[in-house]
Image (cartoon, rainbow, N blue to C red; front, side):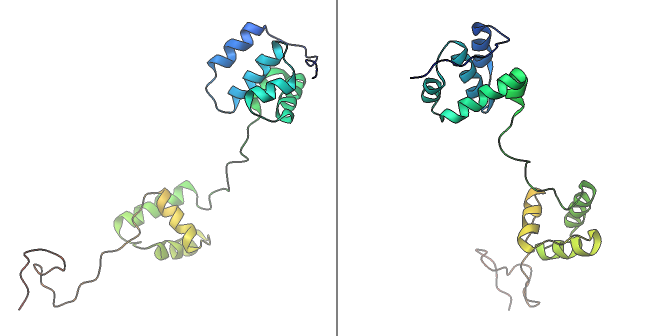
Length: 164
């Protein structure tokens, strides 16, 4: 079946258990659980089966522990670099927000044009839509009304009088 790995543990089994039970981070918790179970004398295969992860994950966590101890295991984060960098700086985004709130930019297309002209940044229409959404800007303009339409004769209003 396998034997428990040879690891120089820096803390006791009870301390490992308490650290695992107190963890709330979704990436740290299974790693701490695995370290505690291995510290208790279980094999890597049985720990992997108990946690529902592959054997290689548990082996990798133990290797990290051997290299740098618990800080090394907890410093490893899954998920990459957090996505691409924003093209507009915070100052530029604030300028975009102010212009949109004053009504100077009323559509996503206006935002694309402003970014190209003022900030020197090229955005696609859908890219600027994401910027508008992140900044919680409205991307619609009011419907145009015919010049003959009176103030009381709006479409869809019940009880509105028609203009003669």
